[in-house]
Length: 87
Image 1 (cartoon, rainbow, N blue to C red):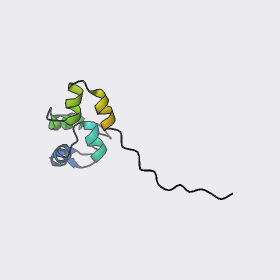
Image 2 (image 1 turned 90 degrees about the vertical axis):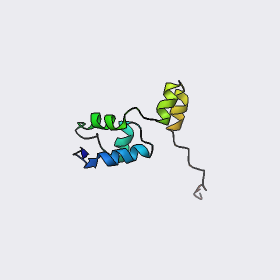
Image 3 (image 1 turned 30 degrees about the vertical axis):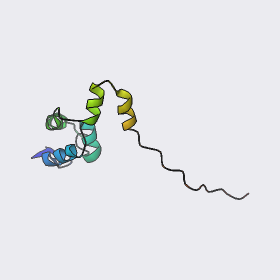
Image 4 (image 1 turned 180 degrees about the horizontal axis):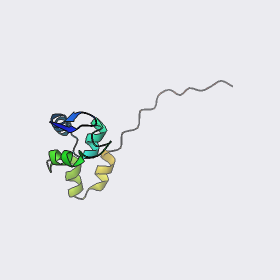
């Protein structure tokens, strides 16, 4: 069944992204664009996600917001060679 008719996203695609770790409608939107146009599918996406296990949600419920914030930050790339122009 289509969940997002704007971008042609099915319930199976949402469930697969959820199984891969997306646990909020915003994370589904990042992966599929579902919910970013008219927004009518956001409630359906929320229903598909339910209140299942989500590492970030579990950290929030335990009061560890700092761990959630740092989990969303990508590590900085390793420093590579720097190009220096000759004067």
